[in-house]
Each structure stands twice: as structure tokens, then as C-alpha cells.
Length: 270
Image 1 (cartoon, one colour):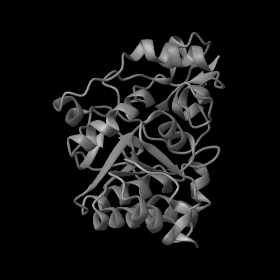
Image 2 (cartoon, rainbow, N blue to C red):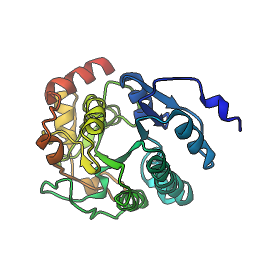
Image 3 (cartoon, rainbow, N blue to C red):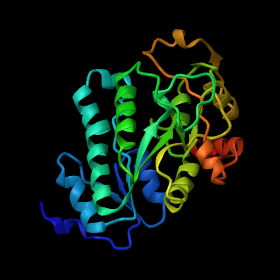
Image 4 (spheres, one colour):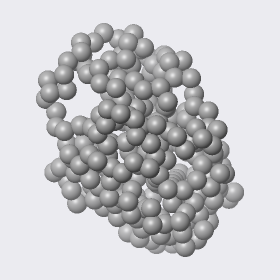
């Protein structure tokens, strides 16, 4: 592989890996960012860009969440483990070597809780292989001094994607009314420079202070629905999670207005 092929941009602050829903969104909305769209299969696919660019921050958006849902991961464990554990662990060690802040996109799906949990909470939901890999890498990254895990939950935006919770639930007639945390991608874009500038490491919950439910989102989006129990949906184990963004709020981070943002997203999707 020719190392020179990566020297195509200068002044990069944020080097993004993973050209899926969130990685693409960040590359389009985060100033001074560059999306490295090389398919990561070997160590040099990660090492060359980080070494050549020496970005202020590396953001890992690579991950297997399953298609059409996390049940896919149960039958594709090797691929899921490589994407969710091997890649971010190696990426973090390289960032520590070259002095770049490393941000890994984590998930709130490592918890099962009907009471709010803060940033220091340890994962307690292991009902799916996906959640077990995410819990594992979260613990491993605590050993790296320049690593941050941003826990997100039910990411929402105005982009039509099956990874967008608003797109996903628009196809549902039967939904639950169980309280859950949610992440607005507007907040994620603002949070990354905030976290890097304030040198915040470790685990960070980036979920909106306003908790919601699928039924509540459908109501805000003015869509018809019927509330049923989770056991009536005919799906595998799912976590229901309430997280508090204590660390972000304590540092003075301002979240987007909740209902107004959901309405705007819904309007743009239509």
C-alpha cells in the first residue's frame, strides 16, 4: 500500500473512520474533519492515516450494530468482534503513540435500567453479543490515557437512514412506551470539539436530559401508533436505558431544545 495516498488533505483536526450513518454525518457537519473511507481490514489501514495526518482527534465510527437489527450479530460474531473490539482497541493504542485524542462511539445499550445512570456506571446488560462486545471495549479503553468513549443511545437526525431512530420507528405501528434516553446528532457534532478542548477522557454519556419513549417520539412526529408491551413485539432481548449526562452538564455543555429539534428532524425527513 502506498503511504502517500493518504496525504490528500492538510489542517485536519478530526480524522473520522467509518463511512456509515454517523461517520458520514460528522464529516459533513464537523469543521476541519476528514472522513477516511478506506475499508479497515489490516493494521496499516489505521496506522498510515493517523501517522501521516497526526490529527488532533481520531473519531472511530466503525462498528457492527447488525442489519436489520442487533440479532444479526448473534450469527456473525467474528465480524462483530473484529469491528467492535479489535479495531477500536488497536486504534486507541496508535492514538496514544502519536498523541491524538481518541474518541470511540459507544452505546447506552450496555445498560438495563429504569433509574438514571451516570457516566461512571458499569455495564449491566449482556443479553446480546453486540452489547457484550461494546461493554468489553469500553472497559479496555479505560486503560488508555487519551481515550474517550462517548455513549450514545437511539441516535436521531434529519437523515433518512435505517440507523436513524426516527426513520426506523416511522415504519412501526405497534410501539412501546418505555422511557429511554436518546442522542440528537446536533448535540454530538457540538460535543466532540467541546470534549477535545476540555480534555475529557474516560466514559461520557451523551444523551439528552429529556428522556423519551418510542410512543412519545411518534406523538411528536404526529404519527399514528398503538402501545404494546415489549414482549408482544416478537424480537430478541433489548435494553431499556436511562442515562444522565452529568459530566457534560457539569462542564457547561448546552443541549439542543428537545421537542423543537425532533419536530425539525421529522419535517426534514418528510
